[in-house]
Structures are given as structure tokens and as C-alpha cells.
Length: 261
Image (cartoon, rainbow, N blue to C red; front, side, top):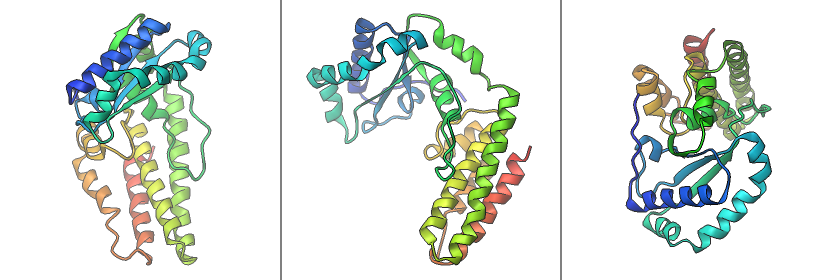
């Protein structure tokens, strides 16, 4: 799917120029990248302006302690940034500073999916470069696209499936103890881990596991029939019942149908 960057307001555009100018004038960086909604032409006046500052690891370590403090001081005085904040309810600049080193994080057993694939996708697939001083961003794209190595993919898929099934297996146990909110938490985590496994199984980087789901499932993965099935997962009529056990079984069926290696 081809995306075209688009700013929802002139204030967003001017703020992006302000961010670019500030960091290119004051730090040794490699790229300023527009990410998330604006980069994909999906933003509204209430959207944040999300920007990633990419710096090679050696220079990142040298300068990282000064990035946020310098930016905080600058934006307090910037009329352009204040104009952006005034244009929408939540319109502000969100910055991410990164050295482009992607390492699978240690897994939280009850925390739902990690964001390894999401991080790669948003920085290298769905981002739009506003400024480059080197080929570092393109080098990273060459290294990580179209998808990471097959041994790592198999390892990640097995791990995600295991944690998804573990969450699903806890649902009946919690229902028996009348822990309905904990059961729902496990169901929602399992659903998000199913999405993670789905993207890994199809060697495709995701945008998010809690936003833009229809766009991702129907348009990026080309599975419109699946989208209808996953929205049905949260149509729960009686919360304090065994209904979530049945929903968990549906997630397991989807996991086996769409992600079984």
C-alpha cells in the first residue's frame, strides 16, 4: 500500500520545519523522519506531530543526554510550537530519539505484545524523511526490509504464539474465580498477540496493535474477512459470564488458522 505524507494543518507543517531546523542546526544527526499519522496522510488537526530523530550509535551515545533538555528549553519559547498546540485538542510535538539499533526486548509475560516489529515498521516502512545528512536510514532499510531474517522470524513467531496461548489458557481459570476483568485483560492481550503473530507469519511490519486495525488487516494484509471476525471478539453481551471463554476459543482458532507455521 502506498502512503503519501500530508500535514493536516499549516501549523503542523511549520512545526515540522521548526523541529528540523532546530536539530540540524544544533546536533550532529543523520535524519529527521516524519512518522505515524502525518507520514501516512491520516492525521487530523487534533493529531500529534510525530517525528523521529535518527542518529548513528556512536554519535547518539555522545549527544543523547542533551537532546530532550535542549528541545524542552527551545519549545517553551517557540511561537510555532505554541501555535501547533493551540490548533487542536491534543496537537503537540512528540519526538522519538533513536540510534536505529533494533533488538528484541525482554518479554513481559503478562504485558501483551512487545513492539519490536512495530518499531521497525514505523521507522523504516511508514516514515517519510524530512532531512538526511547520510545514507544511514537507507542502509537500515536495506538491512531490515522487506523483513528480518528467517531464523529470527521463526523464533519470534513461536514465542508470540506461546504467550498468546498462555494468556488464552488463563481465561477459564480466572472465570472460575469470578475474576472477569482479569479475564478480559488476558483476552485483549491474546488478541493483540494474535495480531503480532499474524504480521510475523506474513513477513509484514505492522503500524500498531491498537490503532488502524481495519486499515492494516484489510488493506495491508488483504484479509477483509478476518477483520469482521476480530471485531466480533469484543461483542460481549454479559460481562460476568463464561462468554469470554468462548471468545478465547475463537482467538485460538484464528491463531491456528492464520499463524500456524
